[in-house]
Image (cartoon, rainbow, N blue to C red; front, side):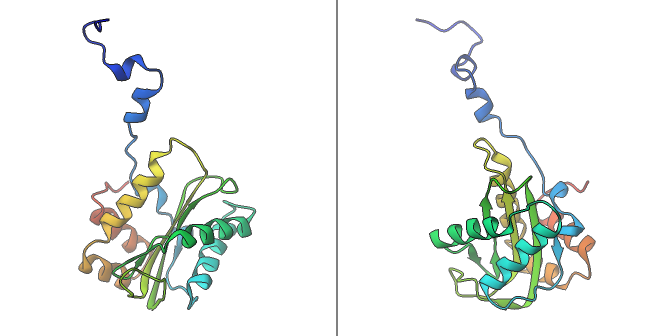
Length: 180
């Protein structure tokens, strides 16, 4: 049967067009001072995950930090989120998280995060979110962070930044995001 003029297949199948329309979201709304750790105390991957989840719990975004830690451990068991070049992006979805959160943390001495290149992680970005099936924003945040820290000079500027506002500004510029 021929299709009527002006109609596409995506418009005819309920819900299909919304799968293709990905909402564009920037890092800006997710970069908040309460989710910034200027210098990590942890010396191991497990210590750092504990510290990151502690920050999440202190904010009230989860009342079950052990469940979040378990989800992060489970994700790490699939393969390290130490992506190399001194970057780690631990991430997980969990029903015990009330909303999407990005925690930015630094370690000048570095933490062995089992990175693919063996380089200790100096910048850690924790991403947690509720388990929504069609949540393209979660993956967009991950992509924006990776894009933002791809250059060595940006990573060094993030480590040298004096405070949260400077870190936020550097990340927004480097990830092609618009400041709020």
